[in-house]
Image (cartoon, rainbow, N blue to C red; front, side):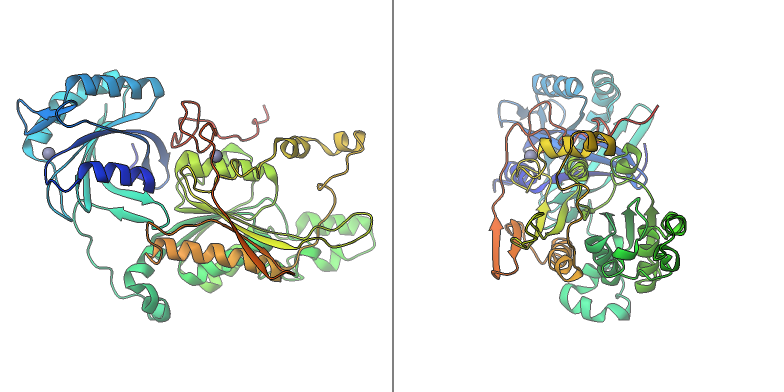
Length: 482
Ligand SMILES: [Zn+2]
Ligand SMILES: [Zn+2]
């Protein structure tokens, strides 16, 4: 098991658990968390999928050895549920106190008595225990090969925060270049941004803006995914792209062969983005992935980011992005601009830009539940060029839509502000984050309230949904070529 080990929980589930543990009676209470798991480059992420509250006096009773304990019946019932669902079993209780907490010797003794057997019941786990104070949490996580302590609990909502077993040391003063930032969100806020790893899917118009802004914000690590090379027609929109990157001395030629050669060797968009990011912040850690998020290995490389942007306009990439958000409990946002032009008359329709936060819980803005991943368009995109021609296919694909940098800015800026506010505590847990659609010509800004379907395979909680399952579910990527 890779360390550090962390647990991520969404804000609504955390609130349910916290209210149960701390009703104001200063007594001990218990619960069980069923969690998925993701093994990533940055450690093992446990992902809270469900919380079972133990009823006081029924499921959580005076113990024979410790003060109180979950009843054997409750433990058996919930651990077999976890085994059936291929989830990890985590027993939870609380102690008094505010920002420090640890297991008692009775707690540790009971783990040593119980967990080896529980590992057998749950197919090797992990299994474990968490103990909460009002604002702290410690954890003892077991697998067959050993035992690990929980590094922290991450709560994902409009305000993203971490709980640790003890108060964290104050960060050193932020680099003086960030003086104006620190005046807004403090050295702590700047340190949080420095610790972030942020994914960007699509480094064209919107994505290249996000890339530059995040680097200047002081985000410590960016992972950028795009298979595309820069093209002459991208130069007005892709931040930092030059004529030389696009090999315009070749691609502007009439000679088809020279044009092809230019297109083939033009610079990849992710490499331009890396250059821009390094200029803005020389100490940034940068992963430039020339690849497609529709491929499972590329998609899985995003499983440890703290935030994920989707700035690519295919419906298939929406499907995968939405699945990553919910399967790995990673908050994200989709950005885009739309300039509909009537094919026949050339008339320009409603120009709008959209910023759509997608948070990993029901009513968090799931793209599927909002009807933004229509199956008919997924099917259309899956057709090959030849199949499209054979069907005399006319649609959005193949028809190049207008695109202008000033429109991209509007959708991307709101999304970048959301990231900054969510991580530095400028939003609180009650902040609502509906989608924002800005109709430019009417100067009309509308918000779209969250919609959600209980049976959604991404955000729903039915046994079939991928929510919080991490590595233990498939992503809707294309099948690898054998
Ligand atoms: Zn205890
Ligand atoms: Zn949904």
